[in-house]
Image (cartoon, rainbow, N blue to C red; front, side, top):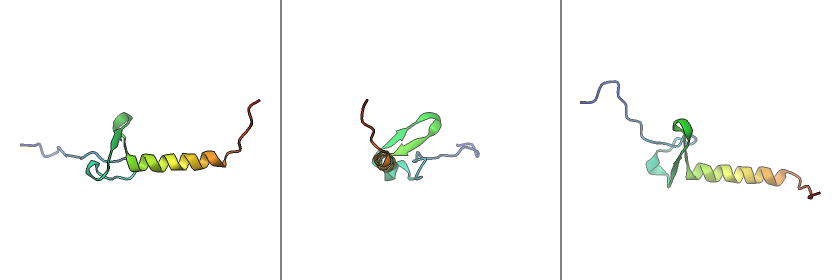
Length: 60
């Protein structure tokens, strides 16, 4: 029998809070942090937009 204080917490994305069963991939990071493929895509798009805003400096 399980102790009363034991809890089962399914793996879920630390950013959008979706459980593992609702995402295609769930990547583990340090200290119990997880990120799903959807959040990775969102971060990638945001970073790309920010990079496009920066002026391009020619090499010297």
